Image 1 (cartoon, rainbow, N blue to C red):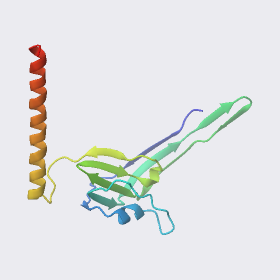
Image 2 (cartoon, rainbow, N blue to C red; image 1 turned 120 degrees about the vertical axis):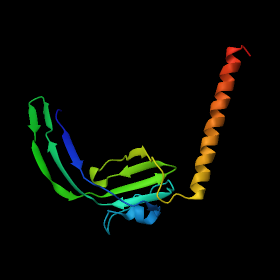
Image 3 (cartoon, helix red, strand yellow; image 1 turned 60 degrees about the vertical axis):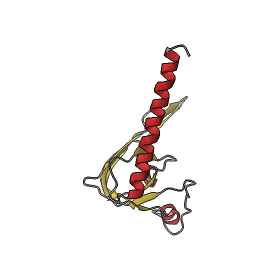
Image 4 (cartoon, rainbow, N blue to C red; image 1 turned 135 degrees about the horizontal axis):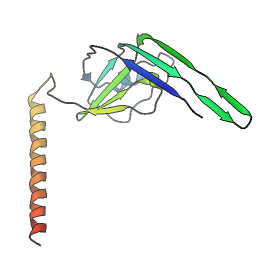
Length: 151
């Protein structure tokens, strides 16, 4: 088998709002009334549900050959359409699911910068994380000093 598919999709000036996570809304988004929701086991902190107009193109060109048999197809398409996207956030880690890609996986990344809803609670959490990182580095440095001195 050779060939396969190639899909390229993009949106310019995409913006969206992150809201508190609602398991029911997240699970049902974009599946229609008769669809069966795929409910995440993770209890996320926040989410964004969006369907931006995206422009793209795709090429499909599989070719199969075997003993006395061969078959293939070649086609392409381009256009603009709304694309359902679900974004879930937990502890700064972001999971993006695009159901139309029909994959069992999500794209993952990390949030950067300060959230717009910057709160005292958030600052206390970030201060605690920085303290734990510093303590971990000090402990690591102390252990490497002990190893260097033969202790």
